[in-house]
Image (cartoon, rainbow over all chains, first blue to last red; front, top):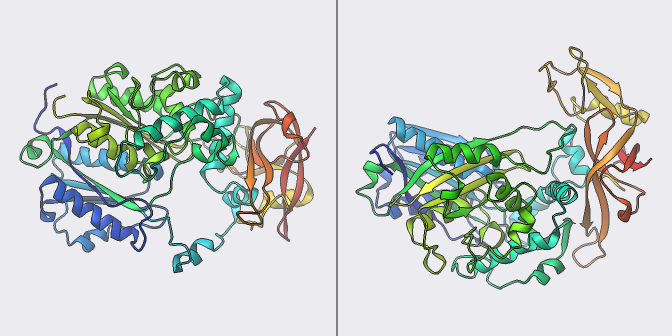
Length: 389
Length: 132
């Protein structure tokens, strides 16, 4: 592929310590992640001329992070709120900014701190009842408090229509745990079996504990610049070959596709098309995996298998470090850590750079990354290329 | 108690009033006549703002469900199972609500349902789905 000097590339990645890390706020993690990304790229903070921030459930640094980092003369400054698609979406806007020349070196940062130290001051806030009113209050009063309850009903639809089973979902969980065991920073360090998955505590039937992602504190920042600028920097550039979003919208009305199809059906071909590629060209995939079901639907929607065939695909032996389909190679949100869209994005960058150590996939020229948000509300795709692509 | 407490707001006041009367109120678009869930504010077909309310027949079909495994008495207490489902009103809107009085083994796509009502906190009532 010919790379122009204006080709947007990822030149810096900063990851704080992630997991049960207490005593730091979302702003603390955001600041630290930006500083780590700048150091990773071989830049100085004063080289940054664009900043995009995104908060988590525990708050946001806001555009005041500029002040916090003492950044001057920013040509791009924004706070976004796009739920789980945050990382891919921020990076897309940064890419467009450097393509046009609006900015040259943009840092995108996401952080969250949902975990409170047990018994600490934060515990009091966490235990307080939220204001329960109106339409969302009705769902809350019904017992629909968060992701698992809603996504359980999507999963059920998929099972009813295509015969997908809990055991098939379990194959996803087991394979990703195998990858996590090769990842020194993964939160989960013990292997699991299919029996472990089947015996894990039921959260919202049919979703069990091992179908659900982790909870983590931490921050991740990514620096986007042009290929021309990145030539002089410290890391092999990760090319942004293509990108897209699809936010389908949804009426609470009869819908035969509900629970069965995500925005990846539209976003996948669009992003790959921008890159001049198809799914056949993809070497490694990093899928948003807040739940095992999300992975299965994404596989189908991108076209790695037919609609409804996801269960057969994931239980065919292709997953895991010893299979032929490298997916969620750091362990994902299920077994490594959960910082929403930043989880698959960061692992995609590490693989594309060839820096994944024991879990490095040999052929890593084209990495497909998905981000999801809400239930089936938000989707974004990135197509990343290695320095050799 | 199948519902926790909930407060009404301006958008949902008519709906809560209907529930108190034992009626499931939906929106009907004045411009094109399509019927929508009470929680919608804009007609999905023609874009008109939804302001007219009409009572549903109360007949529905089950489209999906989950079984919540709750521990109301703490981590070591007994697990209480509660079925929450998506019911498709015969008029078209979907509604998420507890499914009561139906054996879990009998749950299936298309199961005929009827809207009932149950207390939500001290002051309000909300719809549930029962066997039809």
